[in-house]
Length: 129
Image (cartoon, rainbow, N blue to C red; front, top):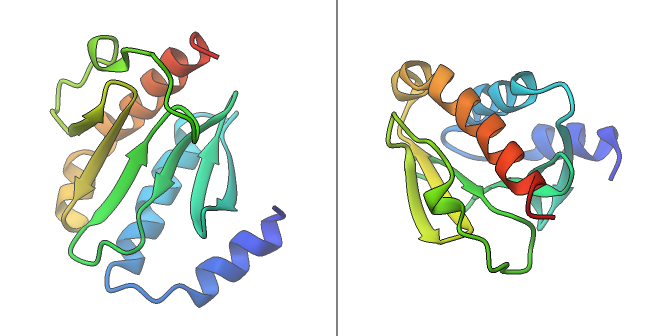
């Protein structure tokens, strides 16, 4: 996917928390200079040594980000590896979790924790690929 497709996706995005999604997007991209962005699975997705995060745009009551280790389930226990002091992660399986941020205040309160989680996730999933 090209940067133009991301720009087009954002321009066409209709979501009650679009402003908040864009803030989380900037936190992700600023967390690590190696992170790249594309449109995958019909939404904003992020990769660095493999796919690791995808927005869940159908969730309308919060900004939901799915952290994963690619599309295929892997026998990787990230749950015991990832440090989550802010307790933002809700584990869906041992190799995938979700983060739900309800509004701008919640995003700002958790800005540093989210950035740290992104980098910890990248480090942990890079060891498993």
